[in-house]
Image (spheres, rainbow, N blue to C red):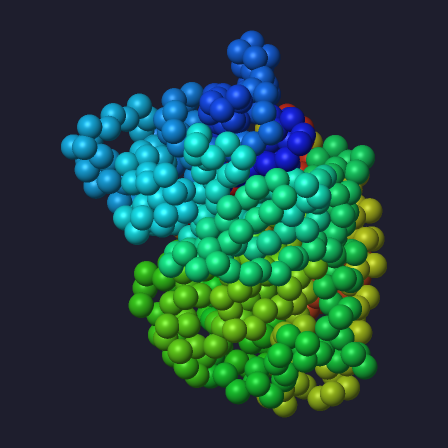
Length: 606
Ligand code: M6R
């Protein structure tokens, strides 16, 4: 989604803005632009394409020289990616960068046209800029407040007024924006990595709060123009965490960070070999009292929820309903005050997940967020928060966030199962101790890298693939399939292995490779039968299974043998080769692995 940055200080504003925008590239974008106050004039440079195009353009036009400015990477929603539709938008007096969607922009536009304004772009953002101009009173905060009263939708805005050349303004509703606090310099940004090179201190801007950012001070107001006093947060990771550190891609680095990410996430929640969520404000008795559990999320996070469902239901025997957030919010779900809603989100800003959380709250359910980004909107709205400690995940394709989300699902399942008396303390301790061993086993699985690279070379020319599995293996297949398609652009589907012959097996030919996951001992024979069915129809089969599984000759073309671990924990191990296969397939295809086409890291619009 769009990235916003802003700077006020003594450095070259253009350099800082470009540098900060580069750090937000991972969010996904199709055009970029900046506005800098140069000798009292707002100078705008923007164009379609990557930041490199913008740099080239400025090399030709001349780089804006100044110390106050705003910048933007655009992920198109209203209007195609083009020079004209790129942000910033505005006129000589006011200029704006925007992330989000202005739902009533058509009405505002019609009104402004009737008032004599003209528009050059197809964007909703231009209406905000012109509305600010229309309401301009000479007092920017007053002008912003008046304009916001007319706007419906979600937004994070960076704003500059020509008449106030020493400051920038920021406001947000439902889209992320932070204010960075430096030494004689201050910033705005959609996400902390953008400003990490300059400062680790930042303020969280809440919905309907306005920040006035000057070189030496930042002032906050609510929409009633009352001044607010906010505390400073400090990022607990350093700039290296947001750099590639010698890896060719962030995705590969993040796959390699998984053992440590899991360790850092689970260790503080284990005491005496038992899950311990007292720091998060809940315990086994509280969890065990819910009637049913909803797990709601999007994409990879939803797949982590699928693993959670299998494990919680198996161990605690509490019904768990997993839903895609964008479906949950529109299907009038049967959730009430006896239920628990767990939302899972790396970014903590996913619009659909946040809306689902709000719906659950409005129905009286208790809510828990499993979130990676501290202070994110979802973390702030949920009743209980379990932070995953993956550190910043930059690659659009989620890997380490998925892994830590699953690790939390396991701990919650153990806690629940113990809470409802389904497992004894000794059993709970044994399971928890096995989970503590998992980081080393994940490390071992990363050692399968060369094998995965070889498998990728066999898949790279495929047009379409199937991932199959049963039970937990099916849950994992969903993630394997998503990973492959999002970065390699090869179509793939995950299918419950037993369901194949009810229709989908008609797709199988020698041109349809099948990746089968078979790690669950009670299901492995059945999955192998399904593998034989596809093999008999010509498919090339890649089998991912445990070390001990007996596989007759000729059943699979390639077998990836996983390190041994309790089979319930297998998804955490089997995920690694699936991630690596997707990664190397995308590399072999020459794709932009960390920034796949059309995708955004943080999906802050519906
Ligand atoms: O930030 P979130 O975890 O809420 O994001 C949800 C999905 O958009 C995300 O998991 C997406 O599917 C991944 N980037 C896929 O790798």
